[in-house]
Amino acid sequence: MQIHEMSMSALAYLGDSVLELITRTMLVKSGIADAGKLNKLALDYVKATAQCEAFDKISGHLTEEEMTWFKRGRNHSSSSAPKSASTGQYRKATGLEVLFAVLYLEGKTERMQQLYDIGFEKI
Picture 1 (spheres, rainbow, N blue to C red):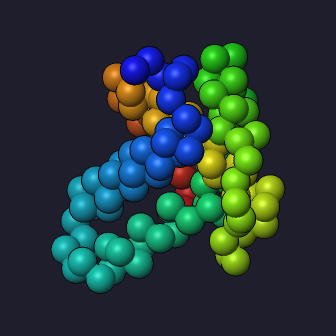
Picture 2 (cartoon, one colour):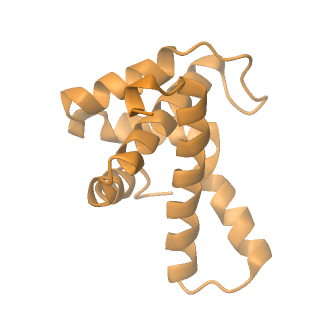
């Protein structure tokens, strides 16, 4: 199956995992050994509000194709936002997840890391 044939929900699901894996890898490499502390810190990166803020930081760095994937994910109708985020924030976070899923599936790990570093630099 080609990427453009995949559902936005499936891509967002995958992108959520991709962002979580990048985050967990970064946290473990920082030297933190306590699993409870790692989980607590990871939440600061993977929650919808943080992903929304990260997108705002990377938006000016995206290619036209990357922005198109983000918009497809953002505009995908979602059932409801979590209590911790507005509908707009949740939709923006979903767009970011779709973008990271597409980069992952295309094997663009260096680009994923570059965008992640820009978006999540000060969390």
